[in-house]
Image 1: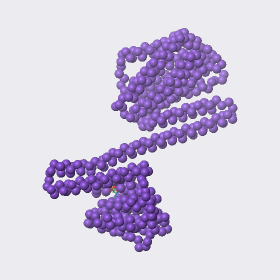
Image 2: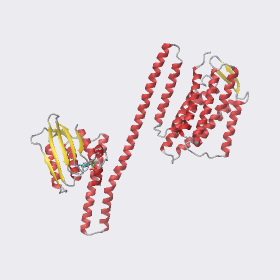
Image 3: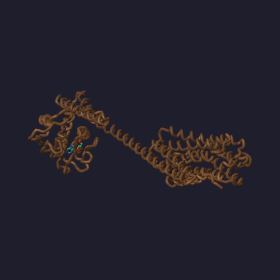
Image 4: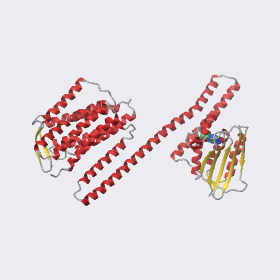
Amino acid sequence: MDLPLNYLVLILIAALNLLLGAIIVLKGGVKRENIIFAILLGFVALWVLGLALFGLSDNRAIVTIAAHIFYATASFIPAGIFYFSLTFPSRKLQIHIIREALIVILTAVLLYITLAPQVLIKDVAIYSWGNEVLLGSSYYLYTFIHVLITAWAIINLLLQLKRKELQHIVKIQLKYVLFGIGIAYLFGAIFNLLLPLLGNYKLVWLGPYFLILMAISVTYAIIKHHLLDVRLIATEIFSALIMIVFFVNLLSSDNFSEFILNLMLFVFVVIFSVLLIRGTLREIRELRRLSQAKSEFVSIASHQLRTPLTAIKGFISMIKEGSGTKENRKDWLNKAYISNERLIRIVNDLLNISRIERGKIKYAFKDTDLITLIDDVVEEFQVHIENKNVSLLWEKPEFPIPRVYADPEKLIQVFTNLIDNALKYTDKGRVSIKLTYLKDLKRIRIVVQDTGIGMSKDDLKNIFEIFSRGEGGQKFDTEGTGLGLYVAKEIVKAHRGRMWAESDGLDKGSKFIVELPVQ
Ligand code: ADP
């Protein structure tokens, strides 16, 4: 006898259900909801096996017994889903006598209808295309109760989803569960309840295929603690289904050349699915990283803004209350002014960063003479140099150098930041700025070197990151923001240049090197 493949695959599906049931309890832990779901999968497996036996046999007695088995075991499925919906995620089962009695009675009715002779199963018919159950009119009641309990379970899960206090991750778990159960039951109901009700028995083998959805997505929801996205599981399930279809197609090849063709198709589908899943996974990870970076940015930025604002508020309120002498008040006003300047600097940096991130920073490039540009910056510092123990040395090249194509305003910002840092992080000694023309490389190199606090290896790795501050830097100057170098490096990159830092270690001074290409 030629065994129909679509029914043979059901044996695999039953085995898969049992396997997933075992995985849920072994990996998800011996918890109430896991055990309930494993038992549910057990009934599903029995149902599917009954259906397989029903479809594969042409012995009347066996077909009749198999029909009773699969309808009877299917009677437990709604109650299984129902109790799962009451306990997932990790909930105590609150017993309500009336509800429990109702579920038990309804399940008993289902069992009675299916097992009692001549009630639901009037007879079986064996045809060349497959077997069929001749259903009694109680089948309407059977379908009604089946759908009723399952709909109740789905409503329970939907109500869970509305609970505000649930963690985000648990909500995602719930969505997986709802997706799996919803889709699986919908298709199961179409092929195994509705179509037979309308007299079409040819597709009953198809329902269990969709149950794999439920089994896989719920197992996934239970055992994966880091659920990523419903989209991912949807992609995975979609891929799994396609692979199953092509696998079945492969097994049903009629001859060798068709087998080879189907094998190629199958391999292609597997490769495509793996790529698809990987792509989705990567995209989701990237989105997650971005959203995390964004919230980190907002939290650090607001923290940065709070410090000067609190200082300004303090000074102004003391002045407003009229405390202190006239001298004190003048001093406070001055301090408030300095804090305000700092605030403006931070806001400017933040604006720059947001422009950089959006790729919206505008550059006005023109032929620029770097020597005059640095002259101006250094002169500014010479006038205002507060740190008397530090000398500022500007070593210009002896020969004329080519001009660079640059945005002078932006480069002023870069060198101001570097010299400002060098002076800020140096207690005593020297800060030197040296410009050289690397003729062979067609580059101009500017080195800002100091004899200050230096940097550790770790610092060197991180200081160009947004908001990143070095170990020594934080101790030495508590007001820094860790934004300056990030912005500077972005500006240098936009000039097709390079920028990096060197230091022999803490207290050994630092060197910041900028290289810009000449035209
Ligand atoms: P900020 O100076 O506001 O912290 P920057 O982005 O300009 O922000 O610098 C980042 C970090 O790099 C500083 O916190 C400091 O630890 C380190 N750094 C920068 N310049 C120097 C330098 N000249 N010497 C030692 N450390 C420095």
